[in-house]
Image (cartoon, rainbow, N blue to C red; front, side):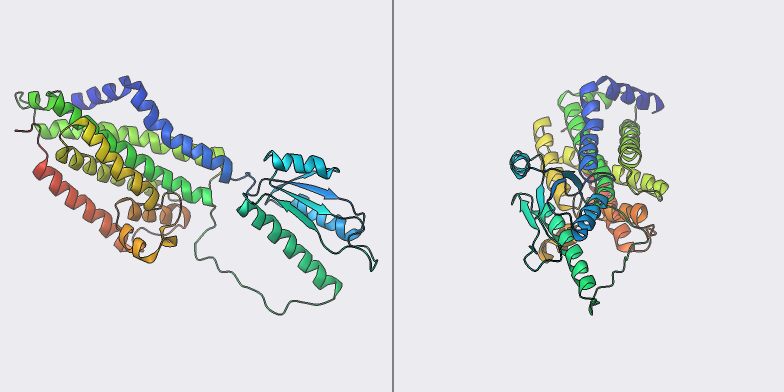
Length: 360
């Protein structure tokens, strides 16, 4: 079996195109999300500030805009140049402080103008909310008044994390799912089509040794995948994952075995390589979007959430995110462990009963 393991590893290494995309596909997503949402990225893009007032109020607003981490600020004097940049999508909004704004003059303007692209709704909300809140505070100071009502925020997580940290764990699960479901189902179907599996029945080699060698060789690729994704996310884009890495590694290997069992089940049902490729894609793509890779599934309609929370990837991601982002024990919510274990047991029984080296 050890010789078969090294033989499979060599075969995977020789198929450079498949190996490249197995490693690079999740890394491409990691880099894209890292640039948009990683630490140091500007959530609301770049804002042009045109300050035509020399009042103290206008100066404090300009200082606050320059110090915020919500967006970058670029100062211009020409509104026409700023509108040209906005039209070319090089900036997300224009903030115009009119002349004499904030001056002790009853005729002085009291409105700050924001020119925004309606296509950037999220950015517009961030910019408008920041300026509106800042002006509200200034109004309270001028009127020597204090707000009566407010909000108190309690963070239920043990630590703070960004959207990129949330997605990074999802990308780990996505990489494990895609490489194992498609890799196992397609390769096993191709082996059957090429009569390789049938020839094994005429040799002294036990079929289970061949299957275990295939599983372990792909687990080695999964280890490299996980290490690359986490390294790029943590060291390249400063994702807030500083704890739970051993737990993530253990859960990732469990997830890899789970998705390999799905791959074997697909190879059992399908008769050709093309059919295996189609079915594995039909399983992986919907699960990638519905199981919580890119967004929390509790935002979905209640009837849909009640179904997809039991998909194989969903509880696995909940366990991994709890350990990586919130420092919680995987045993805190045992239902997730039960769902993952249930899938493993059911798929193992199905694959062991139905999977055959030949069609006869």
